[in-house]
Amino acid sequence: MGYCGAAWGNAAAMALFRYLHDDAFLIFSRKFRFLYEAALLDIYERFFSRGTYFPTPQEVIHAIYDVIKANPDFLAEGDDVGEGLPDVVSKRRRRIKFAGDASDTAEQALRVAGMAYQKLLQTGWLEEEEYGLRITVDMPMGAGLVIQRLASLKSDIAQRFGGVVVNVMQSLELASRLQAGATGKEASDAAFALRQARDQAEQFSKTMRAILSDLRRIKRELTESTTLRDRMDTYFEQFIGELVLKDFQAIYTFNHPYRFRDRILDLARTLSFDLDVIRAIGAGYATVGMAAGEEEGQRAAETDLLAIQEVFDAVSEMFERIASFRRQLEARLRNTVKYAEQGNAGLARRASEVIMKLHSIAERRPALWDAAWVPVPLEDTRTPWSERHLAQPRQARKPLEPMEVAELVVDPAILLIKRLQGEFQERITPSPAVLLEFLRGKVRTAAAAEAKFMRISDIDEYIAFDAIRRLCRTGKVPPLLAAEFEFEELEGAEHDSEWIRCGNFLVRRKSAGASVDAA
Image 1 (cartoon, one colour):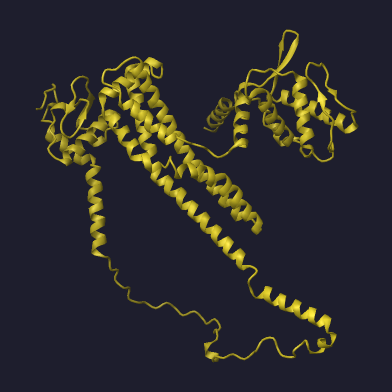
Image 2 (cartoon, rainbow, N blue to C red; image 1 turned 180 degrees about the vertical axis):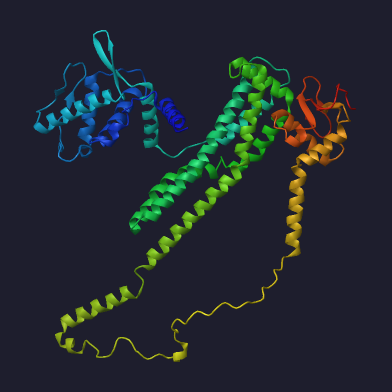
């Protein structure tokens, strides 16, 4: 068992790091770890973040030298290269040349840059390629993806989502305008719009989580701050400057999630119940290559709509958490400012001012020094209250004595509300026993019944019918129902009543010998 676990762990590690060198992260634990980080970010931004430029090794070493020149503190102790290093020239040259007089420190910095370049080659962050007589440098795919993520974290760690909520709603409205049986460009556009709406909804959810995580980080830094200046810097630079003025500005203005939440949920649910639109969008998925066939495209469309509903169903809880966290930080800010203003208004400040004034007067008139001190005690030892009112010393603990417990009185209105809430939850979420009783009434003994022939007479039957329809679609049938009935989706005619319009499905008793439609 242990060998299998170790083998699985090795296989997982190989699958995760197969695009990176085995010693890729080893350089970040060595002597010049900060230099390697800054050099990789600078090389990526300079040569590989845009365009198709292939630098030479001399140009890469030149870039590392510029990093050392701008940040001499990146080198470890004992390798101080100082400041004011001369510029170098590397373009179209076989060897790097100094633009001015080369000092010992400049030569040392250039040697360190060359050594760092060789180390990046050895650990797989860079690779050389011969292109004819020319040698160029490139960044492998795995290393490029890692550095791209590091560069994005360094540039702006806060997530931005301007217009995401509005774009989701517009994409769903475009899909809802699709006519039944539509094909070609209209179906393809609707498929693209629906997939884009799901991606943007998931991005919106990640944005809300990022804001909440940023609030926790700011609270952690406030707790760790030791001085008032550090706390105020954290408030105004990070909480207000980075988070509130960017993320909360986008939430509280045009993109407030509550503004379009109900509209988005209505559109997603309406589309998921409209089988004609689902079939057309499924055909669009298959046309543009996002699904292998129309049937898989329909499943993908239903999955995307369900994902959008799940995101915006949870928006209320996430937004409430963010608002609560923000109120806590603002209350902490008010308390910090309040006590900071009161810090110099106490007795100590006023007493020090009086003493300084007395000293200045006594220095001008030295004869007053003899009468400057009053020979009386600073504190009167007498108390204006009785000795019995003073704090008493700790006495021996008395053993516990049995006592009568008062009866708990509960408001009948609260009990009624709890009972009604429980009945409501049981009614809108029918149990397998309730569904079994409903099916026994709709499906006769030794027979089968199609959904298109089932009649719905009240709200309880509609809730049970809708629950069975969802079970038939997902295939997750409770054992209590599976022991007596079988479920199968049918093509063609559909159930259409004043309660619901949905696809047709078959419910068959397992003891049935033949299928008989139950009208």
